[in-house]
Image 1 (cartoon, rainbow, N blue to C red):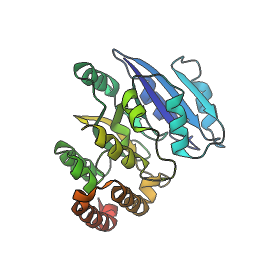
Image 2 (cartoon, rainbow, N blue to C red):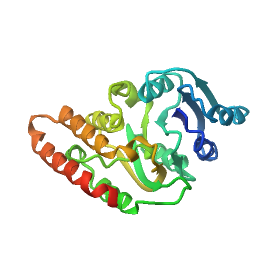
Image 3 (cartoon, rainbow, N blue to C red):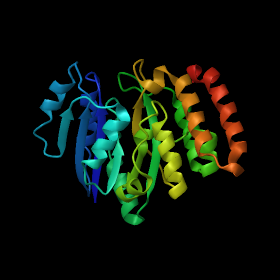
Length: 255
């Protein structure tokens, strides 16, 4: 099988080298293509990308786009992997992550899957361990209605098949923080995910990360997304999501 990993990038020169190394160091019984979609970075990002050009598995382009979702969609449409994902240019895959996913897919092909995810700081040290534990407990009891009530699926640790992408369509361009949550809810209407109870990735929490610095805006956009997807028999789940968003705004800074 073949993985296509898309890395949208814009002025993340401080972190992107570690991101690329975490992808290209993956080994196992699979093919890999990595496509970096850079939005015209003006920091040291392009110099880092040029250092990786000799690896035939990796390509990159740099130029103006319509934002992160546009870059992701263009990347998916310019790759050929059977299983696809995006990893932002400040996040990491854990060693062995792709082989773990490949093994699960070989045993039973899935439309989509997700695993556990660490939270790390600028120096790759784990932080906010309580968030990981909370999301893991929710993931173990996955249901679509539980997902409507709260966004507990970590984007860096999620993968989906090319066939599922073709069914569901591109990532929503008009969302700035919850485009991943919107996509999980769309995928969830197609099929339940396969949960891999292993740590597959790390999300980097730092002052410039969108969901890190602007978690309140992200929480309310996620609620708007849930309201868009909820059907008539699922309105009670929106009340749970609203209460969760309210509580999150108070508790999140202390986790």
